[in-house]
Length: 308
Image 1 (spheres, helix red, strand yellow):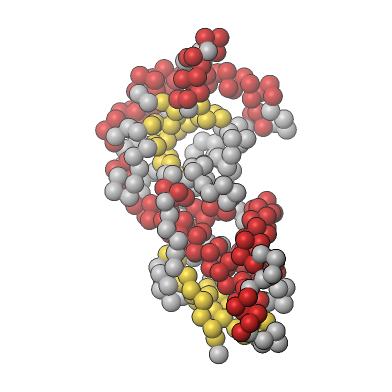
Image 2 (tube, rainbow, N blue to C red):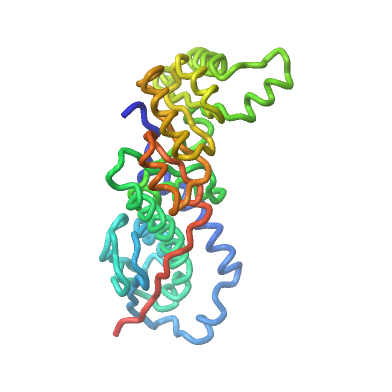
């Protein structure tokens, strides 16, 4: 394997993102006055216990964020996980238990279920793609087609489903796409061939990156044709993204890569779905990027059951 993008884990940066999102989520749900229904019907002194339960089969993600939800609502409410992020579960699997003041539990209910349901939906869809390419060398990657503000969380969910993370943001890697080259064609002074663009990007990163990032930053370029691939491979990009190419063309791209730049990894993108991904994986590519993992995932059905 060549250089890899940074893979997202539940770390301090992700926890910080979640706490920022959570403050907004609490504000939009409770406003300035709180939960009228719960305040009207549930005494302040009442306590209770509830289980968070998966209603569907899938992969779980988001359990690491539940404690922060409860602390934001009422720090007396306690969470005990009974499953782990990345775990495959079936219908009826109990994911954890919430215990404490009943008012706090009820006010936190929807926030907890939204978090787990959304992220587990992404993890579950990712798991289906990973299963579809099992037995091939291809790895499934996400994209930047994420919910604004939720990117690290959603990429973490991809990891929980067995997928890999493409670059987290524009700051992490160079990815020269057709629009970069197309704009250059309009500005005569900066018109580049794909190979020239790769060389210029490497030079720019070497001159401007700090803390040694220039020597480790991935340089990737998108191509639309085999002719462009032929031209760019000798320039030595780390990855070439093959845009909207059918499997037979991808196989030919692999042969040309092996002949002209065997160290370069090939990434397929465009036209990827659960019906096509296996054939794409069995061509010659190393990576398959799938925007649907994050922009089209349906939330996993997760419920909330009171316990005696």
